[in-house]
Image 1 (cartoon, rainbow, N blue to C red):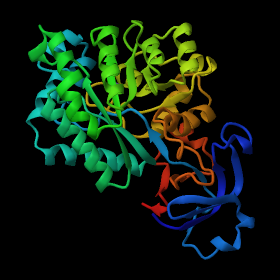
Image 2 (image 1 turned 120 degrees about the horizontal axis):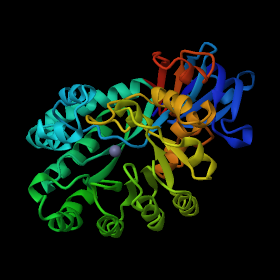
Image 3 (image 1 turned 90 degrees about the vertical axis):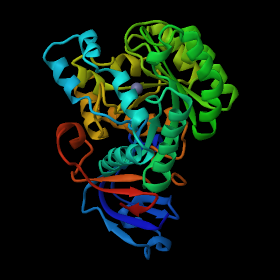
Length: 401
Ligand SMILES: [Zn+2]
């Protein structure tokens, strides 16, 4: 927590609708941060005298945007699946990849065998790169343990990341990621385990509970049981919903008042209408489409339905090892029918709302002082130069990282 005056901002994106448009842009701006929170922002020629003696960061005429919020990641894992990636590129089917020892179960095996230190070091390297690319808050899921002890260990790693790195970490329990191999023929017993002992161990360490509710994953009835049990323990709800097919997962998320339904590639117009009514945010994940060469989420259709849209990396070792939100903004602008303005808003304010965090994702008095100074005169350079190292400086609670 610190005090900081950022001056000489050429273009400030506030996401404050009272300043006009969805991005609430202020030209030639300055931002004053006191004790980690935004105290004032406005024209750089009108800085109140109270803030003129703060430490100064000169943005040199560049654009400044709210820190990115990455609302869906799986960054705590061990093992290496690059060989599986090569086999997929060579045309092997998912069944062939599984037969060769790949797939999510290989990550589960490696993660169970890894020490806490190994898991922390790998996740900390990923989270540090995310922070350097402007992500100031990241949601982190468990889900590669799939037993009581390992799931709790993964959430412990997420908690330690939050304590030791400058990035804020929101932990999510995802014991219902897949049915682990040893429960393949007794999945009811696994759902029982998740609802009881696993949730009991995970709940004190997590903010949210998530379920992969889809074809070849957990059914709507199984997901409802798990999510209700999690809600009874005070956890917020998220759902991996209708990515592979429409089984009613997005509808379930709306029905339970979940904070988010993620993927929603196959959600119907009725599902989206239910999400809008329940305030369930759609977290869209174009990195999966890019990495798996699949059709992109229908960003335009979801946005136009009135559902709040968020963007995230879905950073994981199987289907989307992507760490930077600027690249996700580029994918969403180029391939999902969102405008650059909508994509940037979804990667900041939309993502914060999907995590039920009202104190970030926008730059207004009282919000936390998280922002990214771009090495560019306009936010438009985020999608325009998709491979650029475009974040010149990251400010976290008023501290220049
Ligand atoms: Zn995911």
